[in-house]
Length: 410
Image (cartoon, rainbow, N blue to C red; front, top):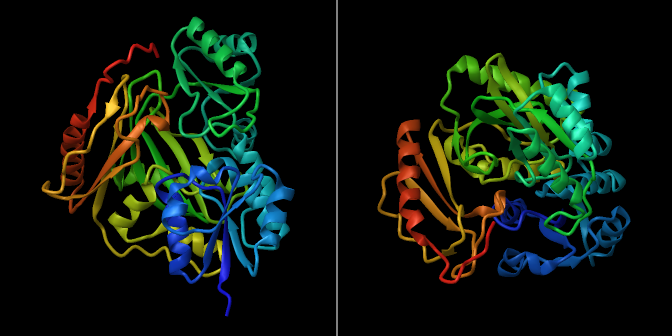
């Protein structure tokens, strides 16, 4: 009997991208990856995953590719990449496969439309304005008040997001955003962007599946004016009342946006007056958050997402109550990466993963691309897990050294 096929429309190049294919095989399905550039996915070659070269930005091309896979019986179609959630949802709908509402996903993907739906649903969001150039941005700054955050409407992984504390900074960054034509994958970008009031306070994510909150995650961020995520703690070490407020706001946001199938990654700040919604992503979290949740609670969100895409019942029941932490090794100056030191002898450390390339010139991009390795730890207490991850990170930092002939200004 021919196994059912799970079609993946692109994916994350590391981490959960590989895990999606592995979980599909564990569930008896054949993963098939559609990719515009198959060379982007080393894991597909290493794991012998069939790859079909496809214009993944085109719904018609995706549908044609699915129908042309020899002997395939498509049982599901999904993606782990933020950029391809809309086309994957539309393709699943066209093929009568399980998936989210394509129209809702399309509106969520554009942060301006998303904000409008959140406001209409009564979800607390920061004061904001959708603008298309420096002059409009400065008018918005004058209305909202400094400091503000400027961000693309269709970005991902902190790309193009910047805190501006003066009108000049806002004007300069607005000009940079207006000049962008394509993202790091070569896809055309929206020309409008958001100006948002800066919300002071700690940042969290709530991982929602369907309309059920699964975990509250504490985030660690790099230095301003950028918003590079440098680590995560699961569950977030906050009082129960704060966790409840965060989860209630996240679920309210998911409902207001018309979501309810599969995973949603909901980002919030805990401001002086309570939770404020930063943004919702209609996909599974990146940054290895699903693996932290699995280590801490036993809930496998990657498996759940694949299971839902295949139209099967999902298991979200926790089986343990540990604490897990992750810390990223981040490039913050021109440098190169040497061999990672061994962290295996440290208590509670569960793994060290290299994601960057050894011996090549590295310069900061001020987004997710600056993360070149990470370490994870799981322990009975939050204190032990965070201490272990930070101790291991200190050891990993010795692998970064100045590039010998680096004179580039960033």
